[in-house]
Image (cartoon, rainbow, N blue to C red; front, side, top):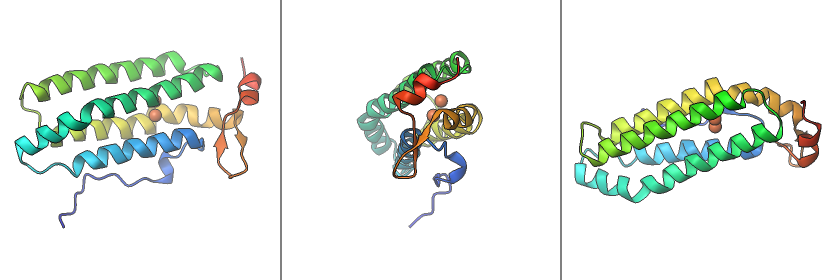
Length: 159
Ligand SMILES: [Fe+2]
Ligand SMILES: [Fe+2]
């Protein structure tokens, strides 16, 4: 088996401590890895795969962004506007890349997936990290030992 050095290994350094967010980030990592596993170098195969999965992939990314943004609003996180802008800019860039890929411009599945990977990893490390500590402060530890935010935490969130 060929070892793909592009694959992402989940690490605790990506962990927010909020289970809902971590589960979604893990799902995003899975999604990127799944794409890398379909880089065959065969254009037709890659295009067929891409067409099959891209809509669901984009929907999942949007769903994740909505989750983060809802939590930011609910907890009155002051980095909300800046963060939302980053999400929007990324979605626009993804749409452009998809158009390019579909139009057969330079892009390959491999470069597209690398673009996704680089953005997801740097966004988690730079932008998402900014709310990790803040969410932890307003979160309660649940019975399973993971942190999650409940309605009481949201009511108690700083103004
Ligand atoms: Fe995120
Ligand atoms: Fe984010």
